[in-house]
Length: 174
Image (cartoon, rainbow, N blue to C red):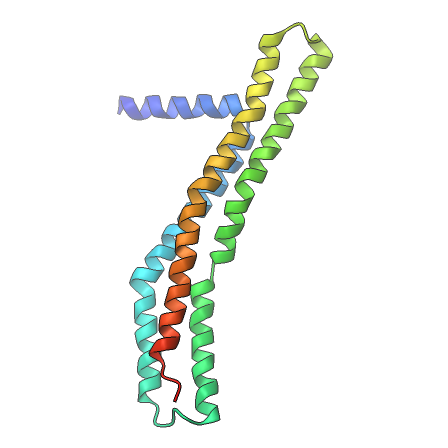
């Protein structure tokens, strides 16, 4: 329990050093990971049943060769593709936003440095260092947050593309 309290205190100190923008980086990171975990769960637990249902409906059809049958097949594939693609754009957007939010922290930190320089002059390096720290920490946090999501979101995107291709291959096009 003491370890958790110490961990929480170190996180609070980090956020205090980096400024309030780190709360936004943390929020974007949290949302990104919740959506990615949900999508991995969907692909492994829910989507196989959806795929089986589509294949069963196609196999149950007597007519699989007419123009209308092919339009129905395309519709089912399109519906499954829409389900597979849902939230992927949001995940990619959150990954791209993390460094931008970090840069916002850089700008606010540099504003603090310039305010200190305007009031105190350049003679107090200790106060300027706090502002520079406030400017660099959010950038680093945003980049780390984005890097944590880039690999997993690209892996997730590959799994989605593979699932689409396997569904198309599972519905014979007579």
